[in-house]
Image (cartoon, rainbow, N blue to C red):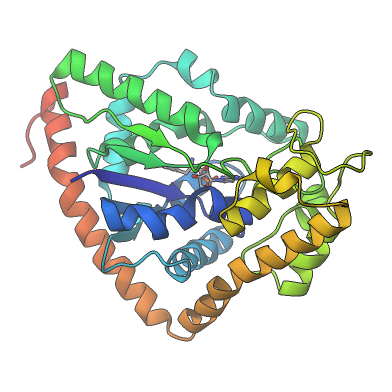
Length: 335
Ligand code: TYM
């Protein structure tokens, strides 16, 4: 059976981008057709300036939202990364096959490091090695497919390179995975800045109005979409280069309604009409997620139990592969 692994980082409140680009597909497709694992990757949240209590809170919230989005622990494995030691164990071995040049070429590293420096902060070493930990997350489970948004493509490519290199040097140990992306909404853009991704850890200036959070109230969602930055034209055309604001709205609407953004573009006479329909569609898509989240919050012991069982299952799956990697690379067997 195909093995699927994907993760979500608790660095901020989850967004419409996370939902349309990744989570929704995990629930509607991946968990039904594959042996799937979905992970709240909390160790990754420590790579930038963080508040410990907030990370803990966001980790629980992300796990709850995964379940609210329809990820079903009876069909797949849901767990928190730091509760399965194999990720950190394997990450170190992969650091021994990765090079610093490879790490410095990662686009997300360059962007995030520049942002930290601009703020006058220093760059944590873990930000540089982040993609290696991500590779460990994936390779520990002999993953075939990694369903992610577009922004993770380079990291999955690196994971493939590390798997191939390790296998060539030390004997076949890892499956070489591949990324899969949704047909539409693989990169949902910020509503106020449609040239950049809608990211949960964005700066406050664009974060508030430009990002739809999964737990935003319906009237807040509507307001954000109605105020989305558009282009100076009037025709509703699907053109990502020339009309990024309108293209983004068309993609969001298409993703929410199962339509094709290009086909939709001919059906609106004004930007206002498109915005209104997009706002309605997003509110309807998020409604069941918000409702279920509220129900789950009333019973936190259920989420705890799911995560405890999930960690036990994940550990049992990862351990043989990580032990095999230890042996292959030249370490003594566990005592
Ligand atoms: P993260 O937490 O930033 O995002 C989680 C998932 O949501 C997708 N995504 C988007 N898709 C479309 N439009 C957007 N605006 C948007 N924003 C986010 C991401 O592509 C991702 O699929 N490094 C990863 C977490 C990770 C991981 C892994 C993923 C760690 N280990 C192993 C897969 C496998 C990240 O930061 O995702």
